[in-house]
Length: 386
Image (cartoon, rainbow, N blue to C red; front, side):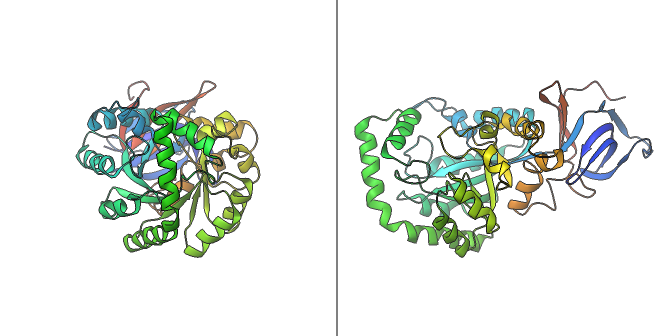
């Protein structure tokens, strides 16, 4: 049955329709226009949005919330099916319609970050016929680990794996500029004691010489599988130049303005965390996402660790006068879709694209009222259809 959404403030890629309508037919966007020129169709379900914003479904390329749902405390694990179900509901209520769960492949240094967990979680995704949103895997390969690169080879052919990132959590660079910052994070996150952390640092030092070879291996795996590659926590221009030479097109969470500027200059699509925008600073003391956006170096935002931050962060950028509404919404919709090559299917409100849509009311905070995924009304908080 076709669905007609009326009296909506429709946010397109480059403009806004202040008093618009949108028609959903057979899971696709079948028409968009301005009232009162509303199409009449027999058997159509009509919903008056009361002037609320209608935006594309949010596409989140990086979020590790599922890790916290599976392991809420060090040494405590929850069944993967339960964790996926509750995460699915959290995502829907946050307006996220396409989630790339960022799952790490390392040597189990950080709790569930290991190959067994990621393989089990892929199985849960394949079984999750109850899921409301689109669930994919963003495989994060820890190149300072012994097994991360090899573990990728075991899952790269899985249809759920749609994005791979190269990360190096060795202390002394990237996210952890000092041994002390690395120690603090590991202790806080995993509960490991000093001697255990000492052993991790020693192991990473021994494995450092093999990092270039592991990077080449990962890049070749992804090229063979036609999967986009991102880099993680870039801190220098030299690193960016290396990635550009390798043909890598995505840089997520650059830790310095120099790295962000260089990545953007070379055409890499730069991603930052939405919580960073809301808080006005990085949780790790690195680059402020707002400063990078103000400088024009950011192309997309992700949830990182907090899915509910996505839509509020976009509207905050508008309220602060840093971006217009279409540009801000594109940071969480059209631009991430482009980064992973899905822009012809999702990420925009345009005829022929999937009807992944979110109704947002401002009260004054942006509140997700309704969500459609492929035309299916998966979250309904409005009054009944007229």
